Image 1: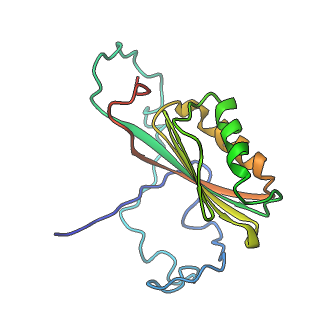
Image 2 (image 1 turned 90 degrees about the vertical axis):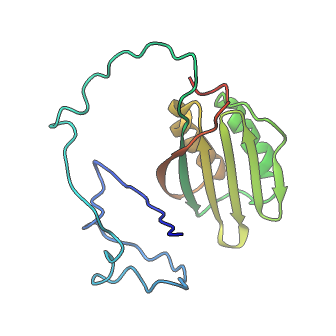
Length: 185
């Protein structure tokens, strides 16, 4: 069995080949340092540049008739790194995040689950997973939604504002959603 895991990145603002790469001081065990200008592209392949707007791919989309059956399931994971966090990174964050999630119109399925520096809040539309590192004043967030995509940005901004973070970086990945969820239409 051959296993292949692939990520596709695209941006109208970031130049993945020429923008500066920052070393966040994270030790790697398998690959040598990818911040070296001679090795930073060793794992990038099958790349191309295009302009979807000039190709006519970004015009008005046709109206789609209302679907009565779920035939696909999409999701988005936004990975967020919040550094220089100014609030306590402990179990008290559970209530804060729960209120933020509810204020943004998401529907939690259960009380927040806190276990030794990890916080999980399952929602009807996805979940929020936080990994808390109080000594480093650092919190990583995985915000996975398969419903209310239009609210992802405000949810992320509200969560990072609640953390009082002075330095936030993030990226999104299109992933699978949740079949059978009432949030699919």
